[in-house]
Image 1 (cartoon, rainbow, N blue to C red):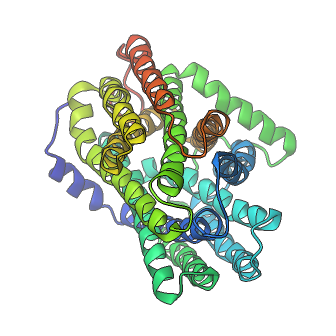
Image 2: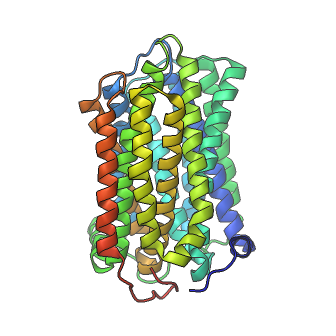
Length: 437
């Protein structure tokens, strides 16, 4: 495939009216997610009176991610049954509604089970929305431009969430660095979800699909639809392998996220300096987001030149060799600057690999299966993320200073890259949507 200048490809993608609206839904909704997560982080993990440890961090992520991860693939069947535009509208409105009990529980100072359940509903529906956005993208972007669209949209969404987190932390500091401030930030998140639903209404009801056969609205039909989605990953090996390498990266990211949180909370700062630790963690998040942005800028041109598989291999190798060593050194010395550089490296690799993998899935999976496959994709990456965090809960001291673990994670990324190069570098036939993997 002939390579085009990056700016020309970007202009062509942004020229599409419905793409711009779909893009707007993602940006506004993920900005709201960033606000929500900032409010909860300050309430649960970065409050002076609530001391975190690796087990508490792992439990928080497990409660928030795992239940939907196992329900999500079944819910994904409905993305191939219902009009996806309507899903985006209604799901964002439901998210807004469920921020109300979260605000009430924070007002009561309750960080127990019911807070976890309420947040689970909001974030779980959010994952459903993201799967719907990914499944909808091929309807508003032509095949050759999918790689550019996949570079722009998830990366921009990640940055929007990071900006939302920073804005949430700053807003909380302005209105009161306490539970009252968290409530204000949560209310703003609810407003963002309503705005995302309004933007989605600008897209025609049938514009985003699904097309083709639709699974039956019965329990048996849903189960059959899910099995069919799993079968697609076996039939289309390029898509299955692409999802697998993203899962491995998310496992590594889980280890490093939990480690970074413990390091800034309990190694770089004494327990009483919760707000200072939160600020440093925000810088770490921003560094990973900047790395993701760099990956998104470079990946379309690099993948057109070398192919999605080879570029993914390069990205994983640099994370395994450079990123893990920087994080390990930052933990051992300790050095926050090295930790920042490590986060930049890991963020770059994650977004580069995700852009390529999204494109391979969209090219090789039929449209009437995309909702199920992207929900399975989401389940896999969430489970892998939590497994990485659980590993830290098992092996890490409270300080997070376990450089050997970070180096072993790097070795895992390197081995995965070599496996992917060996299994995935073969050319595959062009898909009906255009392009080669």
